[in-house]
Length: 246
Image 1 (tube, one colour):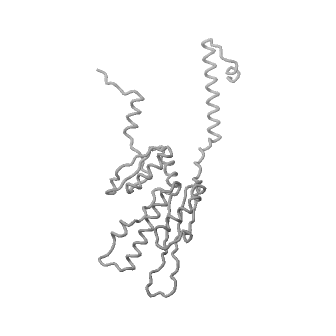
Image 2 (cartoon, helix red, strand yellow):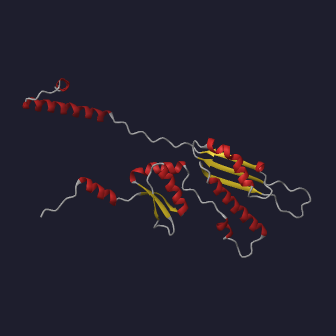
Image 3 (cartoon, helix red, strand yellow):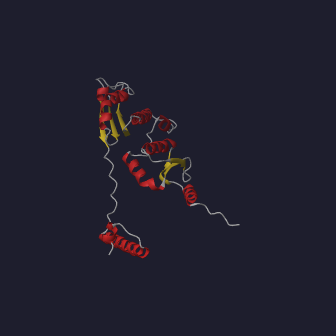
């Protein structure tokens, strides 16, 4: 009995099903991998989040082989994957046996800056945020007025999103000031930096003169063969083809 061969369409399906995706980011935390996948899906690029066998507890993001270049351009434009901001859980878990008051205060400020940066990055259009806090120094021996607390916020936004984020500056100042005792919103400096627009895709390579000449010769030869075959069979070709054929 003759063996049944798969049809071309079925064969193509089997080959496509056996081909895996191309990784565009690896060694990520689960939250980072999900951020990358959501950004790619929003841009119309199908993405899959899978376990990264190379790193224990890490994840990777894969896209179809033909979408690798577009995916990497998008991730570069949006500065993804972003480094996770350090929060209270990470900073306070690194303390020594008996930390000094200065060390404890510095750790709390570092963790607070990370938490505030996370909150700012939740704003639509913001791809990265940095928060620097300078609270009023605690000096019980000071006789005069203590210097006012200050803070600075640097927010990097996606290309074309500055106009959407700038009206939120007052809210961002209030967000940072509300987390630091004695800090007034007016003492929070906000800098918004817009990312450069992505570079346009490279144009397809132009066909050389030799390739164009070869195509013209092939077309002329084809018309000549068609005309000769038609004359043998007694067919009448359209005038346009007859004039072109030698």
